[in-house]
Length: 98
Length: 336
Image (cartoon, rainbow over all chains, first blue to last red):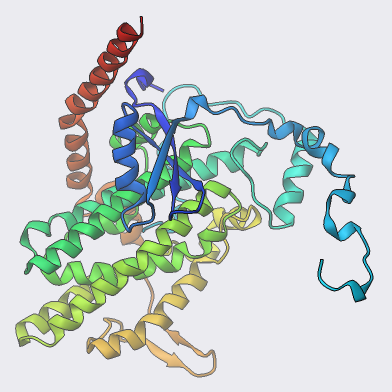
C-alpha cells in the first residue's frame, strides 16, 4: 500500500461510564492526535445522546491482552473447580434461602 | 445507515496481493464449529483469509457509504426551511459521520488501516452505496431519504446486528439504535409537507417517484444473481437474502405511503392474497450496475467533494500531530 502510516493519528480505546455507580465499559475506538483530543472525539462519537457521564481513553498500543490461541491453557485451571460455585453444595430445603 | 448488499467487488488494489496461508485444519475446524454454533468471532481469533477479506470489504464499503451519505443531505443544511429542521438535519448528518467512524474502527480490527481505507475510497477502487450518486433536488428529497433510504437501510442492518464478527455486530447495534430517529424524522417532515399547499404535496410525490426504484435496488441483485450471498450466509455475515429483505421493505412501506397520501410509482404493485405479500414490477438492473461502476449522475461530484475535504483538512491533521509532539517534548523536559 502506498499509505504513509506515520501520518495517521494514533488509535485510542474508549471506555464510557453510562451512569454514576456503574463501571466504565469498552465501547469502541477512534483516532486522535493526543489524549485531550481523544477525549473530545470520544464525546462526539460515542456520547451524542447522553450515553455517558465519564469517559476514559487509553492508547490502544498500551493494552496487553491474553492470547486467544492459549485460551484453553490459560483458562482451563478454573474449569474443573466446580466447588467454587454455590450450586456445588446441597443444603436441605428446610434451611430455606441461603 | 447504508449497506446495500454491499458485496460488489471493489476495484483491484495495486501492489502485491497477500498470499493466503494454508489453513491449519484444526484452526479451520474450530472456526467452522464456532460458526455452526452461531457463535462470535473476535479480532484476534483465527479466521480464514477469505472471511477476513470479505469483512474488510463489506465493513469498509459500509463505512464509506455512511461518509459519502453525509453529502446529499449536507447540501440542505443551510437551506432547511426552519431552525428546527436545520437542527434535526445537522444531528442526522452528524450521526452518519459517527456511523462511518464506528464502522471504520470495526474494519481496523481486521488489520487494515484507516489510511488504506480512505485511500481506497479516494482513488475510486472502493465502492459505496450507489444511492448517494443521485442528486437531492428539493427539500422533499431530504424527507424521502429519511423515510425510504434510511428505511431500506434499517431493513438491511437489523440482521447485521447478529453478524458472526463481534466488532461489526456491536457497531451495527449502535447504528440501528440511532437509525430509527432518521427514518421517523423524515416521515414526519413529509407528513408536514403533505398538509401544506398543492405545490408542497406535488414536491413530495415527485421525490417519492424519483427515489422509490433506487431504494428497491439498494437491497442488491436478485438472489439467483448474487453468488457472494451464499458464502456470506454460510459465514453468518449475511442472515436474510436480498430478495427477502426487499419484499419485507415493500410490504412495510405500502401502508406507510397510504397514510402519507402518496402513491408508489409502480403500476404492477399490488397485494397478492395468495402469497400474503405484495407483487411488484421489475427493477432496472442495468441502471444499478451503471451507477455502481461509476456512471451515475453524481459519482464524480461525490468523490471529488470527499477528496477535496480530505486534502483541505491535511494541514489540520498535521498540525494536531505537531502539537501533540511538542506537548510530549515539553512534558519530558519538565520531568527531566
